[in-house]
Length: 430
Image (cartoon, rainbow, N blue to C red; front, side, top):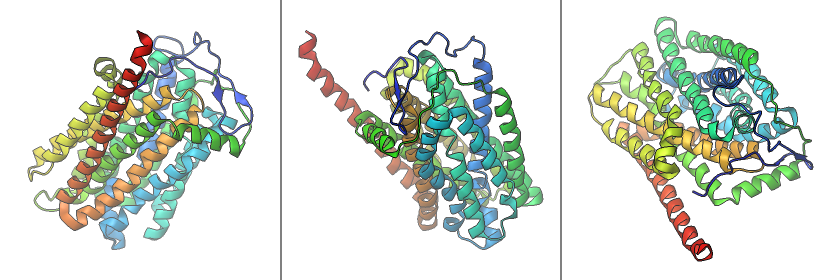
């Protein structure tokens, strides 16, 4: 991969005819040890917890949702896929609004609306209405991920950016884990409706923490909305080969993760495991591994380079998929550990690379990554359920391995393209 921008350059507002300039002076930016960095990290960690807890609140409950509405695994999976799909479709326009109204304001509004909808989800009278509410919730959450990435790119010193984004991604993993564990045990005692209500209360607490802790933006200048400028900026990002590869990698990684964690509950409640709902929810404790691997992404990149870190992540994910085929609970759990570690490491490396590579329109660059990422989640959840229905867990694993092969192919292509570019430039450097 070519070197990413290491400084704050003029940020072209994708939704404006003007430029939203960001000072090139990074002296006042946040970094470990400076005032405000810890508050910022804690606030975005809380936002990450709320985002993943809400977005995937029904995933561990799919067997119970299926039983409640008499639905198949594929039909129930839409309670997850509708949320992630709506987020994917709305994240780009929401990022444009963040260029006008500010990252902090957009993140706050997203959390408020998503939490409010979350408090109505437990009262959905039918599967269709539940899916509709989840779609609205996903659309509301769309304002948070890309705005958070752009906020970090603007407010944090470049050398600390990978670590700061890793902490935000770690919040995602904690949110995914705590939400699923909470829903599993609450559902076992009081049913799935009480479980999603409990997630709404958890997200409300996180939203309050975020609002109280997030520092004021210092390096952001608002622009005015202009769809033509937005289209130009999006077009320039899509024309960048490196960004296209990063978007594809994010989508493929998330296809694996979405498929595995949408279907795993169905596998574990059936023979030969026959686990109760509370234990199935507790399986998501393996998300702690994701917290560690995403936070360590910066060190992996420093030691192995970006492509090396991606090769390690994808190898770990593939090994986990193969190991999970065994009909022993210990092997399945170890497989989930490896899949989770590989996914979160790969996601942290790819998403931070997007933020560092885009020298203009960072919010839109991050939004496109988030769109690809959550489209991968939506596709993985639905296709994983279909594959499970057709071929059992082996069918879901086959889908995951196909996506892993895609990540390898894209990364190998990037390695070859970088080598060709170095050879092309070599004569001029001598």
